[in-house]
Image (cartoon, helix red, strand yellow):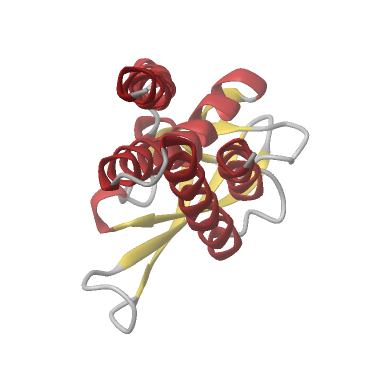
Length: 181
């Protein structure tokens, strides 16, 4: 029962990250707890071998990464729309106290969605005055983001691969237990 609860916690973490309040810290705490619960549940299921913990933690950590990072892009592609927006303001933000790089806050004006603020790191900056494709949600439930940051095919493949990896880990553990019995 612990392993399925861990998977449920990983999905809950993704929802906390994708939907309001869009809390990264809460998503990380819930996601790490979910990865730990899945790992411990699989070790318990397997009867205690160390390899079950490694396989379960690795596969569930990849699932957590895929559903949080890829899930945001999938939700925007599914429920949102892509608009060509004008970058009206770009401000550099000093994040050296937490990270070893700087970030940017972009203000974009979109014809249908209105004005949005998009935070990026130094690799995703857009020049002020440029036009950029933006994924936004007309209902305002999802945070907008630059479309270039979300490759739909890559996100679908990553999500499906991570689900297959978790299913494979469970099946591998199940077969090893039956072979040992």
